[in-house]
Amino acid sequence: LLKSVMVQGVREVPDTELPASPGSVDRAFLDAVQGKRDVLVPATIGLGVIQLTEAAWRSAADHGRPVRVTEL
Image 1 (cartoon, rainbow, N blue to C red):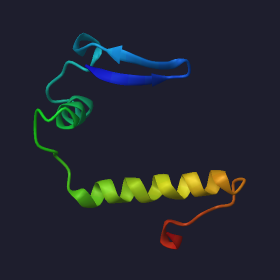
Image 2: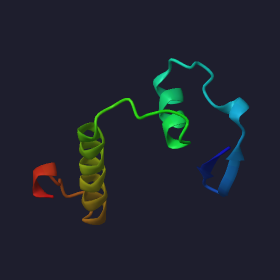
Image 3: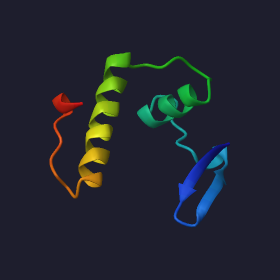
């Protein structure tokens, strides 16, 4: 089971509600998170996602001031 964050709190998500297709990107990601398979993308892709997310958080914390990933 995975936990799904909701406005009211956290709820358990049974496997039957997860994407079923073994070839789907979503299923591959969820399987990797659960330790059922290897991650299919290089770490550099994850790093870019983290940098973009951090820039968005910093921008939001600074009242929407644009933050470039290169500033991090």
